[in-house]
Length: 110
Length: 115
Image 1 (tube, each protein chain N blue to C red):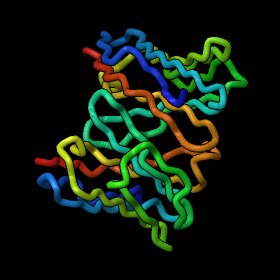
Image 2: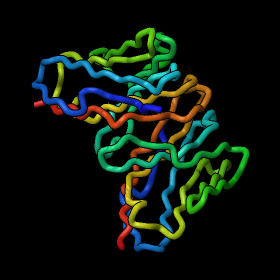
Image 3: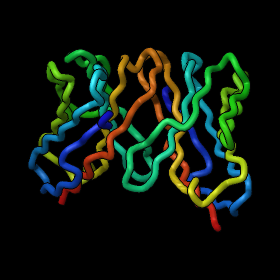
């Protein structure tokens, strides 16, 4: 019940396209859902986060969509750029600690 | 402001040995968490220390242990190394405990290879 599922495992998008990464969870105690971005050789860094009281949050080209009833949330990257090529992790916090998804490796082709 | 510093960055050990990894959090941060990152498994939570006390522990065997010092610096130790312990070990610090959903600030990790 502590698991966060994430798909796809890898994603290739053309420059200017939309990248979509999906996550799903079971534990209804989760109440904070961040996305982390990790570049090769670096540690993950917080990209954007959402709480379940809103259905969408947008920061620049990055948008989180949240469906509480379906227990799903997704990251949309608009106008994807080669510099967005990285591994993306969704995560959830239940008031005790963070649980991370297995990650999605995004490659944006120039 | 200096980020999270992890040492060593790379190390190679043989099966049966033990290893100690170090993490210096961002100044003022009292929470230090450790994660194991492997391909396909993502980030697996090891433990969190807050004000020198282990606050939470993940599902890892007792060979994995840690501690936090009064200056918030943390160490983790893995004894009797196994091949499967090869991974990137990430340390993350936060000004508040994880349970209050604060942002995690990660170091660049210590890459352990067990031969």
